[in-house]
Amino acid sequence: MASATGSSAKDFYEDEKQLMKLCDFLRSSEGPPVREAIEMDKRVYYIKGEKLVNFMAEPKKGTKWPKELPKFTSRPDAIAVCKDLCGRQFMHRSEKVAKGELEVSRVRDFDESAYFTWIYEGNKKFSHLMTTCLIIGFLCCTCFPIWPNFLKVFVWYMSVSLLIFIFFLITSRAMLFLSVWIIGFECWFLPNLFDEQLGFCESFVPIVSIEKTKDGQLMYRIGVFVAFFSFCYWAVTQPSEFDGFVKGQGDFIKDLYAGTLLSDMSQKDKEDIDKPRMPSLEDLLKKLDSEDEEKEELSEEEAAEALLNSLVDSDDDEE
Image (tube, rainbow, N blue to C red; front, side, top):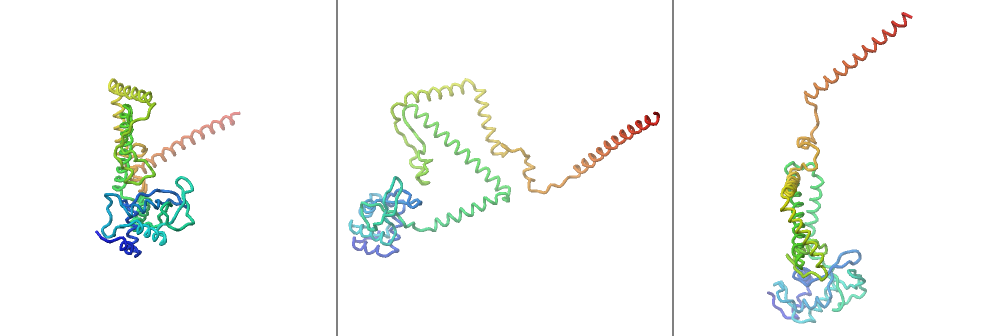
């Protein structure tokens, strides 16, 4: 670990490259916690000046400070570096106008009681890589009709498996919650799973949360318990109906994987959908036979009409 006094640490961060390394650390998961807000119609991350200085001067126990960066040994030196961050526009001062909304402050000086919004976004290589992958993925999706058949089948199985997994995950979470809620506790598996305000990794923390239910829910818990007990009693006493329900679900999943759930075409028609349709010899012979039959029917009609005309003419001659 780089060892340095407060003054040398201050001098060390006068180099802009070293200051950028410090910003990379402060913006990482090991840095101080930040909050999200909207500023000029853009989502930004901000932090209070006092919390930033406290973290730099006295980092919490367990913080993994980078070995190549010297620590601050005095609070004034940390404040001086924060002023340098504002001066070099790595962050700017902001003011709260509403809950979750900020605006750029006219005051530029660093103050521990003010809020500061990060301008520095760090290394953008990973972001550019993800953007490139997104564009390539989009182009691949638009070319789905010309994909080889084995890739189409693979994507179909992956999509169906993901759909079934999400369905069973949601159902299992709800059943676990109801089972524990009946006895007076709220238990959630992955409680932040569907929280849109959290990041990907934060959505899986904590794994389980258990809290005591609020007062006044006793009658609701009794009602849910009666309904759940009634369902279990029906499933046990009416095995034929319940077994039919289970069998129907199994057939549904089989049809879903086979791709025949909503299909009104045969598999052969699906495979030959892009091929030119040439009539076979049997189809040509059937077409010729149908044309001959039409001609024979037409000739019979003509003969009947001629006979009728002759009869009419003969009656006219007799008169």
